[in-house]
Amino acid sequence: MPVLSRGRHRNPKRGACFMELASYLAGERWSDHPACTHPLLAALARLVNDNTSDANRARLVGLVPSIIDLNADDLRVDARIALRCATTALPVSAAERQLALAVSVLAAEEMLARLDGVPSGQPASGRFSTVPLSEESQRAMALVPHAAEQARRFSRAARITEKGFRRYAAPNAVQLSVVGIVQACIPDPDTLLRDLLTGAIADCQALIRGTDTQTAPEHATPARI
Image (cartoon, rainbow, N blue to C red; front, side, top):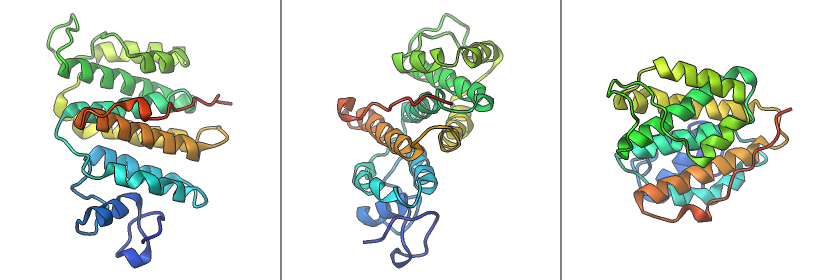
């Protein structure tokens, strides 16, 4: 069985990243971009793998089977992953990243509302609307009130399309969130990264397979120093 380590690997004898191990277990061609997993969820898994310390990376192995055959072309999957990432990272990230993460929260909430047909009370111009936020978003935004208010002002003038969200906004939210957690002044970023990936997998299972997300652990919100 390949051992988890950072980066890409030519073959299993040289080790494996999280998604390469998934491709191996799924019986696919050896790759860190296997077809068995949603591309954005796979991107998150690669980032978590590469940014987890060597001492704790083995704790990720048990999550690999749950990511296999978890793929769909539903944009709500991208939005849920982006929202999970942004709401997890926002309360612990440094101040200079909070505005971008708060904007990511609003963008993901707007996209989910739009895809679910929730009326926003604004013209169909592509601008972010003032849709009601989920409880997870409300909690995260309440912890960073200054960034939240700036994000709301920015979002009133911003424009977003479904294509732009999938290609740029959602991947940027995932990348920024992982970096924010890794560089945060918290005692155990490895555990928060693992909880983030666990929660994102549960979100995808709920959307794609209709699996109850209550089995997913709630991510703790460490206090930023």
